Figure 1 (tube, rainbow, N blue to C red):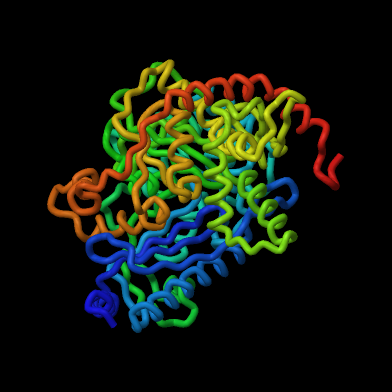
Figure 2 (tube, rainbow, N blue to C red; figure 1 turned 135 degrees about the vertical axis):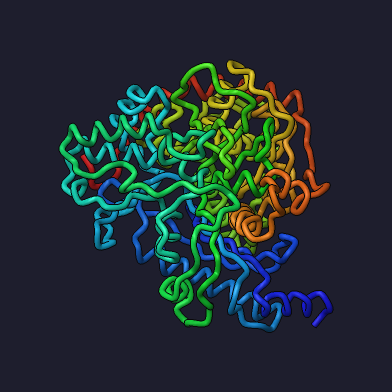
Length: 540
């Protein structure tokens, strides 16, 4: 064993490492950090949501078997690398896909299947709440899901005792604490950044709605308390330890930081929590977060107002669809390679096909695609149909084909970002990209730079993503200095001089993306016709 590995073995055995776990859309990932926030071990579990009775969901069994398998994979990695068993931790953090709806009764029983962020089924509630609150309430938000259930007259609502998100649910089961980090809470209900809590004036309006509809509960009785980065949000109970590690090896008593959403962990993982910084997280969904100097001039249905894990105001553009269709095409090309007797691993496939896209025409040669696996609120779709279309004179090459799918993965996002940058004149000094789209070096970065017409940086740790980010937040909780802000901690103790590798936008790429977007907006009628005419099997 090398000297460094021996050192890490001692640190792990002493319980000085910090663990972050994030439940993403397609993968649950665990990252173990050393005292300096360097990732030294990891584990993962692949999973996928399913469409059941018109609802995108994961079962409780999916959640716990996946979480346990991910933790086992981490323990295995620790044992293989360092020859020690993971028994104790310095701190732990849980993160998950933001938004969605998990409702429980007074006995802690789930009342209806988990409704994920991917469901565009709360349009009426979102519209009515946005109008009443004078604050944009997107369909994904937990409050919109609850109010839609109220409007629908769903039987379970009267029995609601606790409403939370995926991260909040897991944290509750591990610690017994019904809390949320403020960044996650800002995707549940409007936040007062000064008070670091739900906006009391809007809470009162919601309580009036509930009372008028005959419900006995009050908002603050059923929603989680709000906490900010740096606070201790409970400790791992004996029961929680066995839930995470059924082998019984993991010790209880570990402090947990407030549970956060993937937006907050993405901001943390890219050092994008200070004013005039931004980040784009691109995976199954895609969202951009820009930390604001001042509020927006008006309410935009395309823009969510959320916060950093420390509670600073952030403009968020969130799109339901990003790489799912792109991944499906890569899988198809992999299947073709296999049929030809060619062995190509997944990383090689992505590298070859993504880099091929850079050889295409700047505007994708007239090709058009939509990556709408599900609905897309930015363009007002409640359902989606992945779609590729071209005209006879289009330049149908592999390079243009792949380029069109990379462009369209950011198409809806660009519509929202154009509002912020072209209409609200929001200034950003740096944008950092992270997530699966950026794993092939230089490609996703170049495409994003063209979309935003601004420099884009990617860090070496971009692939670690939110699991690393929530581990950093857990580390901040136990290692911050007196009065040390999250911004200071990240700058001094995590990133230092690491600002990432910056790429300037190519002017021709920028022009090409703008031309592609003209085609994208004009072709939305084609996507709408596909939704209307192509019904999923088993539906009328």
